Length: 157
Image 1 (tube, helix red, strand yellow):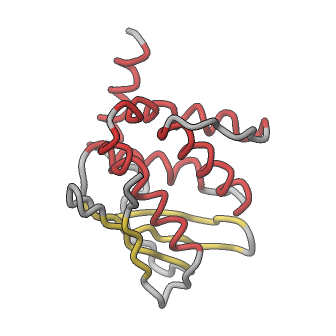
Image 2 (cartoon, rainbow, N blue to C red):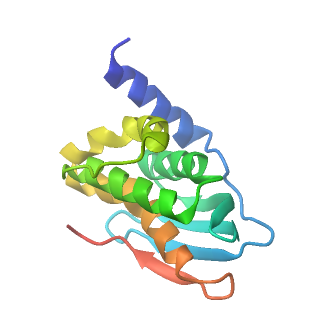
C-alpha cells in the first residue's frame, strides 16, 4: 500500500467514525465554524485547565475531509498546552496551504505526522478550507468563554 492509499484510508476512517464527536457537557470555551462555500458546519468545544487543553470535542456536519480534520485535530490537541496547540495550528495551516512550515518543538513531531494524511488537500484550494474549518473554530473558541458562541467563517486565501 502506498502512502496515498494509507492516507486516504485514514481520512475515510476518521470521516466515517470521527473521534471525540460530541458536545462537551461543561465546556469552558466553544465556537461555531461555517464554510459558506460548501456548507460544512462545526462546533468546537474546549475544556481548559489553566493553559492546558483538558478535553476537546466537536460536532456538526460536513464532508469527509472536514470531519476527518476535526477528528484528527481533537486527538492531537487533547492534553496540549495552548502554546503547543498554537504551534500545531500554525504548522498544520502552513502544511496544507503549501507555505513554509515553521520549526516545531521535537515533542510535536509525532502529532504533525498524525496530521500528514491531510497534506494532499494543498493541491485543491477549495478543500483547504474544509481541512482548516475546525482549526479556525478552535482558534475562535480560545478567544471566547462557553457563554459567547463565536462564529468562525473560513477565510478565502
